[in-house]
Length: 465
Image (cartoon, rainbow, N blue to C red; front, side, top):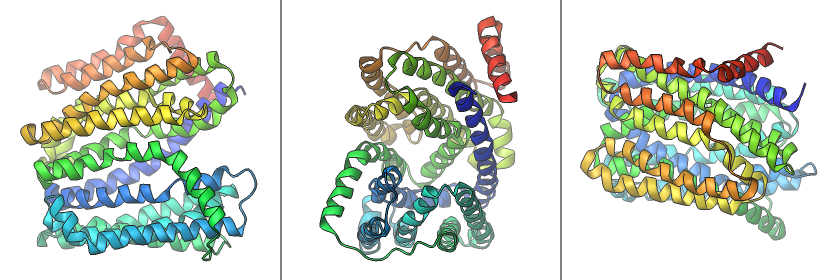
């Protein structure tokens, strides 16, 4: 089987496996949000957004250091990573616990203070478990890792669902997902400890510390800038539009992430498959072009389909109280579709060692996104967040310029056709019921092209082989 066939077929299998996890997550989120309501979900979203950002920051690329080490990491490597993560998580946790009231006042959400401290205490669990998980990955024990992730995900809802029913009447519903997160982290740590014989200890070797921190900084700097996106909802929307707006946007983002899960699969496949084409600019460019088409199909069509049925399904499934998120979902969906199209651009730039180019793109994106949200949310409310997503689309010009400089300009024609149709459906879904249902006809237009029909048939034949 050729590289192209392996990537497409392997990607399809990964998508199916991940879809099962997404389905479980969707069912859990459905019940929790329906019971606790937008305001309490928004309160949790504010607190979790801060903790999640610090958790991503605290990894510092140390996971990649261990994974990409050419020789097998020895006990000292694991011990040193464990010690560094202990120091980082301790600093972050103490900051959240001791500064909970100050941070909550800065967010203009004083009631988030105890949640910030409680969720902050999970950071040592999640970060210190990292060396053990990396050891399983290095041993190629992916089946065990998947088992641990699935069981821990189930444990989250085992705790969160009954807590939601018990605490919601007391206006304490935000503590239900917090309790679920605690049980999830504890379950993951216990299962990982029992799955490996690695027992990290404290270690302090200055030369090794310097090597790890420098590597982590060079790799993670661009990622840290991108992670600032996660602060826009809790910090800017929470301050200017209130907790309910945070809750609506948080659920809209969650739905968009579920519908766009194929994007992360493409990223994982690309970093492995594109490495085989590193010295062939033409094949890299062709791979990006085909990847853009697949992303437009795998991300754009589910977004458009959901927009068509959402006004009917959302009130029934989540409750009528959640219908305001339909005002902002189409705009958020457009942002996710655009990001999926340019996903492989950043993969190739990372592959070519152009980390700084990706950093500049991320910086431009955050400046446009966060800056627009800061200006628009005070006047437009949560819809301002959606228009900030649209304003941030201008940043993709930056990454196009960088990729064109390295391997030549990709041809966007085919991908743009699918994207245009998906975006048109998203926009028309906001007009009225008749226009919304008729817009589904647009999704069939590309099939009028024999070339596009043959391409889709080709993908289907690869998956059957």
